[in-house]
Image 1 (cartoon, rainbow over the protein chains, first blue to last red):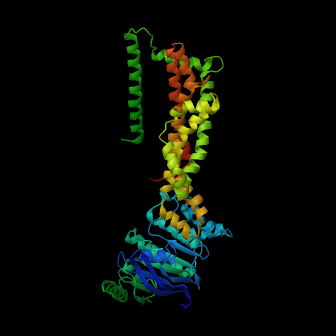
Image 2 (cartoon, helix red, strand yellow):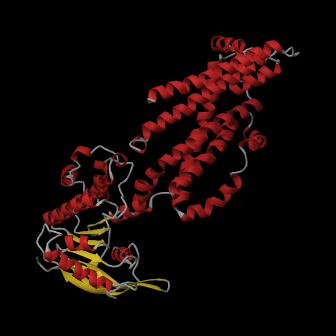
Image 3 (cartoon, chains in turn brown, cyan):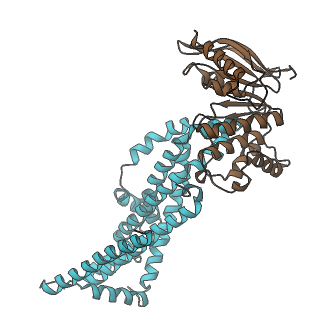
Length: 246
Length: 261
């Protein structure tokens, strides 16, 4: 993996009134890596991500994207939420087009949409409306929408929180494959340690509120990972201890 | 029980009750000996069919009168749709628009359209404009309220998703808020349509020389109860058709909203 820094977070702090949520967080995200962020429930993971993307203005500190202040209109960043955010009034195909049209990427738009639908296996459902789809298919629509814009940075906030374990594994494999294939940089937030160990190149462990970084663990197990392998279990236990430990 | 069977049974119950009512009506009319002759259902239907082919008043058959009434409803309803949807959506989404218009709207909203009749006649005379104005008032309130509700209840996740994809404020409004509010606007349109239809009758009864409200008032003037009830029958039929037409339109326009679930 090359070690070019893609995102640089320096001294990020966020207060809501008197409540200190993020306390002086600094780290780098490398180009093309899959970075997982784990932490105890309620530790401010989502605040963290929202500050990252400037949906909230951070109280102090800075986030640089390729050396510039991060800007959603300028930089190609995609975001996948825990809740399904497919537009109900658009078909699957139109939902995928939507992101490209907002970014005015009209060139080769039909091919891009087709490719994205193929990547997530929804080609047959291109003309369906979200209400006609199952939960996992809905989340795949959102994933296709994100990948179609060929983002330089993909942010995922517990994207599989509402899916059953079976679908979860399938979509996790799919996302790892997509990211490696398209060399996308990913920040993936989860409270599920196993998921983090399964997916991440590095795992950033957060402390309880006020949130700061406990440790950054490098996870170099080869993909696809075997959740029953001793190395995997060892890694999982190590991270569990880190989280329990404050 | 199969769905088809269920529907047939519901139809039989509904139709049976209807026929029973007609029968009771007939019996009651025959048994009572009032001074004013009350028409039997058969007489009303006979008159109604007669009105389809012969003029009521000098100029129009009942179809002509219905068309007059519909033209008034359509004019007021459409004006209300345009203004109400624009005002409702912008009040729902932009805090400044809400701050400016909400107090006035809330003050005027409880004033029934009928309360405007005297003022409207003074302002617009007794011609068409006065009727358009009243129907406009009747339809404007539900259009505005439902568009407002639609815009305020937009899923914030979708707004966030659009922003993350790089949408600017105008794009968020037109690409997310407006389409998300459409189902709510349609339910407002249903209410607006039935309000318009009712208000039109009142407007015509106060002053008009044609229209379905006029038929009833004209019947009263000559003590012709059969004409009055036949007119009421027409109101029921057309109102029913309008409501169902609107429902069909909604189903066509909102394919995404009624599939699955």
